[in-house]
Amino acid sequence: MSFPLGKRIVAEALGTFGFFFFAFSGVALSVLQPTQIGPIGVAVGFGLGLALMIFLCGHISGGHFNPAVTIALVCGRKASIKDVPAYFLGQFIGGVAAVVLLRTLYSGTVIDHFVNTPGPGISHHIALILEIIVTTLFVMVISAVATDNAPWSGVLAPVAIGGFIATALYIVGPASGGSFNPMRSLAPALVSGHWTNLWIYLVGPCIGAIIGGFGYSFLRDRT
Picture (cartoon, rainbow, N blue to C red):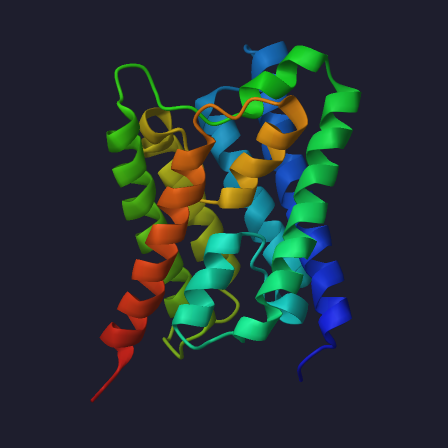
C-alpha cells in the first residue's frame, strides 16, 4: 500500500534526521573523546544508523535519506520523478535539523569535522572518481536488495545497505572524504559555511546515482 506523499516526506525527514544524528554523533565523539571511538566506530555509526532508520521508515517512504538514492530509483523506474522535489525537501529538513542540533549540543569547532574533504595526498579529481564509483555500487546494491525479488531482499535490505555504507566509509572514506550522499555533505556545509570542496560531493554522488540507476535496470532486464 502506498502511503500519502505527506507521510512519506515526514518519514524521509525523520529517517534522515536519525541517520545523521547517529552518524555525526560518532564523528563528534571521535573528536572530543578519541580514545572512546575511532574510525571503525564512526563507520559503524553511519552504517547502523542508516540501517536502523530504514527499519523504522523504509516501509513508509522507501528509506532513501539520500538524494542520490532518490535519483537512482527514478532512473531505474522504481520511483516517480514527480515525487523528487518533495523527497529532496524532506531529506534537507531532516539533515539540516540534525546538524543544527549537534552543533548546539557539542562545541562549535566539532561541526568543522562533519564537512567532507579529500584525504591527505588525494586530488579533487581522484576523490570525485571514488565518490562516483562507490555511489554507483551503493545504489545498485539498494536496487538489488530493496526493489528486486532476489532471495536476500526484503528484511535483509537494511542490513545490506547499512553494511555497505560502513564498509565504504571505513575503506574508501579516508581517501574520498566519504560522502556518497549529497545531503550528507550539503547540510554540514550549509550550517558551518565551509563550501570549498562541496562540488565534489554534489557532482560525484549524483553522477554515480544516474550510472547505477540505469546500470542496474539494464543488468536486471531479461530482454
